[in-house]
Length: 215
Image (cartoon, rainbow, N blue to C red; front, top):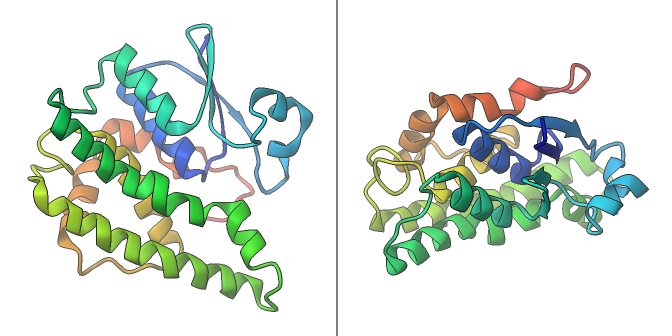
């Protein structure tokens, strides 16, 4: 097996890439990079990615970092059809996906949150408050952006798109941090449709959660 994914089971960016690999029916080996244990700062991982981030994907004799770039490569080489052919529609779907992957996800990155809450006496509560502060408005904005698309049943129509691959990991995070989005029925409908898709099931963090990790 030549395709290797270096990832962390709860990483949103890694989750996106796992979904795409399963959509492509691409066999791959997972190599866990435990962010809590600092594996991402180890010399062997920094040699893979000087940023010390996950995911890193070895495929087709190439090494790629940055989840959106990886998704572009898989979309182009595995015919995933995650983006429309029309340039205007393509840009709109990209913008929808990037509202999460570029704007919301980075401020909820583990290293950012740990640094921002490092001086708080009750750090677990501070982390939870931080996540809720950013995730809920981000989901509200995403829901509003969905108004220009028909959810039949996915984000942008009757086929999966880049937006679905970015949304589902963020909804997982919302659930983890106690962010209520029960009043956003579009998101619930999309979640329901994606949750039963085999690629999303196989990529879900619960499928690869280490035995010692908390649910």
